[in-house]
Amino acid sequence: MAENKPFQVRKIVIDFPKFENKKSTEPTSVAKENNKTKKGSLTPIKTEDISINEINVENTERKNSSQTKSKQKTDPATDSEELLLELLSPNKSIDLKIKEMIEEMPKAYSIILLLPRAQHELRYLRLAKYFADNKLPGIYLTLNKGISEILNLMHAQNINTDKITFIDAVTRMSDGVEVENDKFIYLESPDDMTELNRESDNAISAMKKGEGFFIIDSVTTLLVYNKAVIVEKFLHRLSQKIKNSELQGIFLAADSTDKETLDTISQFCDDVKSF
Image 1 (cartoon, one colour):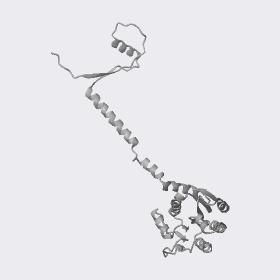
Image 2 (cartoon, rainbow, N blue to C red):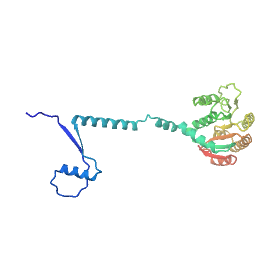
Image 3 (cartoon, rainbow, N blue to C red):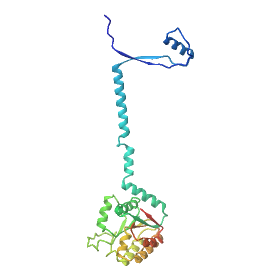
Image 4 (spheres, one colour):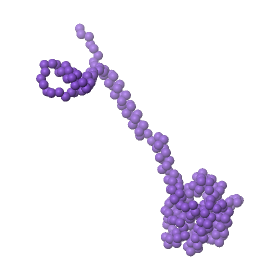
């Protein structure tokens, strides 16, 4: 009785030569082999025996390899994607805009920045952080929040406030608690423009020429408590003082601020930008 042999699949790879269609008495396989020998550039017929089990294993390995590569391509937790997410975060986006804007300005300048109300706070905090990270001393005139609250917000953003002198026009008006510090200056209210002029001059005079900044966090609030013409005169005088001391002056205002007033203020500032 004939012996049963394992079933095998015979894989044949054939390179077909070009030849004239002539009748031949030779077997087909022999004729093709002879023809390839004559050409001299064709590889011989290759054959190999592969069992069914070997085929299944090979297909499984290919499938697993393909799935692994696909997972690697779509996995979001890669270094490049993490960096991209970081760069696209709100803070990073604002920081890049601040850096580009300031690098375009001359050494000494005053500029009006128009901010949307929704992100006013985040923007002035990141602005203060830019100067603090560059180790520049400065003056910060706060018209919306008392010093204690501003400090809490800045420290939450990792802003070093050691070199910042604060002029606070809110705490006394709102019966807030004053903190004893040589760098904390308290005004009676935002409408005391005489005191505001004096304290601003003193703070600027105490700074080294050519090294520092002056931020007003809300020109819009000044306009609420004072007539437009008074605010215009204050900013005009302050802009001249800032330029003479070769400082960087940034006056923040809501983008809804009266256009006519902004047009007047812009005449003695270097630029007006939406931010």
